[in-house]
Image (cartoon, one colour):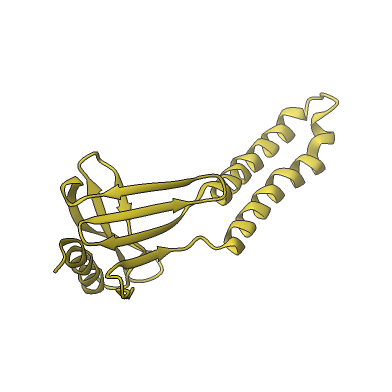
Length: 160
């Protein structure tokens, strides 16, 4: 679990590693470039088979574009919890966004259960603001661990 530093702040990171970004971006570009390169001769010059090949190319784009989008826009998240304030920093290669949440801005702290088909459920702590914004922590393996982390956030926020 994340530790409270000497300055009394609790830092909680949800990384988005460069290797993951590269993998997603290269996989997406591969899905876009290769079918286009290999199948463009079936589309041009126009023929009876052109719609069939164009359908395959657009299907590849439907896979590749979201992968490239995820590589570029998925943020690395850092929560910095201190007495009276939570700073949530979202960073990706394009933008850096900071959210400052005060105790009066918090509508609820809840747990969200994530069901997996390949194993047991995992849990995240969800902070919901009065404006409707939702911020989630990383996954925890048990509900008890997620509840302990939620309580830890609350105790640091309230200065206990």
